[in-house]
Image (cartoon, rainbow, N blue to C red):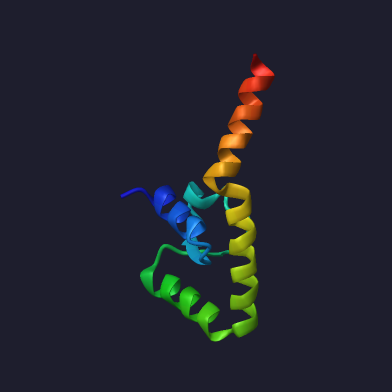
Length: 88
């Protein structure tokens, strides 16, 4: 499976996510926590830290909503239409 497609599944579900520092989620600006390691234990700790902190989780959820508004397919389609119209 594709990591970037998995990231977009979280965005489309308006769900916060924890990801590594890989570039596959580089376009996601909020609603995401990036852990600095590819080690599964460090990654799991990153997830658990977010779940244990209600205010951090609330902030991530709000960020996930903003990302959905910015990256959903209707907005993406409008962006491409404006781009195509500018080129014509």
